[in-house]
Structure formats: structure tokens, C-alpha cells
Length: 361
Image 1 (cartoon, rainbow, N blue to C red):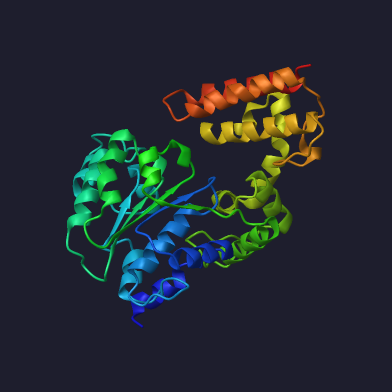
Image 2 (cartoon, rainbow, N blue to C red):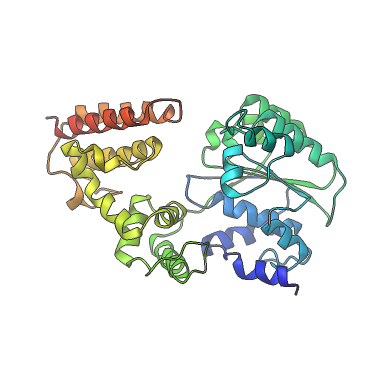
């Protein structure tokens, strides 16, 4: 094994057990285009990349890629010539996948901001990619994520190639909003619904990742001690049982602080305390308030809360009319939350509206 390959084998994290099971099931089936769909936080991208890696691997097995060959290393360092990553520019930059030279020059010179959509030019490049001769191996792979970020023009650009690829080309589309895709795109793919893991295995996996993080085995960040199990459980509950979301939250801030902040959030909103959302992006704030609204509504009609513990919720008993109106307003806000606005003023407005709803009779 080469030094580079050995390093790759050591640094690449193993798939979560529920993702590994799904990978083996997908590899046992035939088909040139798959649509991986389900709610966010279930590992669509991880599964899609593992599937692409296995298809491109020089020594694959029924369990997936070998992790040691030159192809696996090329995927790991984001340089595989037979893998096309079709993603929004913002996500490519965040995940470290290279952009084409023209796009990179435009962004470096600050001629424009990176796009949050999958641009039609990128789709045209992907179509051209499928027509080139393979550099190595027996197939080429186009991975589209998040697939719902394709607008109508972009999707239609990809449509014919998706239906009849020129030669041995495979497609993987991954999304957490399959309903936003064109029906013509969905109809040309074999569908796979992401498995929602049971709570206890997901919590155990989170604990293992936290241990590795604390030991400095994952990424550059190294923590003084692994998070407490109770903190991870709070974050997993807050994420609605979605382990990838909970892990991202734990990695981006101290799990204990994040858990404590989450537990204090409902009563802070009832007081109208804007500082409780001071460090949150508007999209995160809206998501948290939707979860709070859901749980207060659930308790109000005699059901258990899902995202908070009952003891964390405000002691007030707001009326159902006020809560349902608040839920509708939050839903409308979520649809436009990424549009330009003054984030500070928006957070103030969100907290003010939450205080009114939570104290209404």
C-alpha cells in the first residue's frame, strides 16, 4: 500500500452502520441513476459519495470501496477525473471540492458571490463530462447534491443525458426535498428512501464520533474531553433523531454549551430574550422556533413534545388559535429566509412574535 493510500485509509471515517447497510443494498442492485431522498440529516451525501467511491474503485467488494487503491485516494483528495460533483458553488467551497478555473477566477476577483443554486453552466459541463473518454476504470459518475438546488433550466439541461447516458456513466442524485424536483427527473431515476435510524444506535454512533473527535482523530479540531452522553442525547432529540444534524451541531460548538442553550431556549423566547438567538443564522432560528411551536402545540393538545423535554417548555398555556397562526407565519418565513434582509432586525422580529404567541391566551 502506498503512503498516500495508507493515509487515506486511516483518515476516512467509516460509514454509520445504517448507511453501510443501505450501501450494500444499493450495490447489489442494477441501475445507472439513483435518487437518494429523505429528510435532512440522514446522511444522503455520505451515502451518495460512498456509492460513487465504490463504483469507481479498482478493487470493490460487496461492502463497498476498498479504500486503498489509487481511485479511492483520488476520490478522497477530490481529484478523481471520472467523478463530476454537481453542487452549488457555496457547497463546493464549504466541502473543498474544486470549481472550474473560470468560476474560481470570478470568485477570487470578487466579481460575484458564489451561487447557492446549481447553475445551468455547471450542468452543461456535467453533460460534456459524460461524453469524454474515461481516465481510469470502467465507469464515470455524476453526483448531484442537493438535487433540489437545480432550477428548471438546469434540470432540463441534464434530463436527456440522465435518461440515456453516452456509455458507462452512472448518476446519483441526493436530496432532502424530492418533492421540489421535476417529475421528469424523478421518473428517470431509481428511488431509494433513506433509512431513519433507531434512536439508541444513533446515540451510540454519536458517542463514538465524539470520542474520536476528543482524541483528535477527526478533522483539525480537538476537544479537551468528549461530550457527556446526556448532552449528546439532548442534541439528538433537538435534531429530531437525525444523527448527521446532531453531529454537525456538536462539531460546530461545544456539545455541553449547545445542549444547555437548547434547553434554555423555550423560556428565553417566552421572555422575549433576543440574546438567546444572537449567534444563530436566521434559517437556524426559524427552524428552532418551528420545533418549539410544534412542541408547545403538541403539549397543548395532550401529546408529548418531540424536540424539547416537557420541563424545558414555558409554563404558559397559550391558546390554540395563537399557536396555529404562529406556525403558519413561521412556515411562510421559512420559504424566504435565505433572501436578502437585515438579519439582526429579522431575529428581533422573530423573538418578538414568539413572545406574543407563547403568552397569548
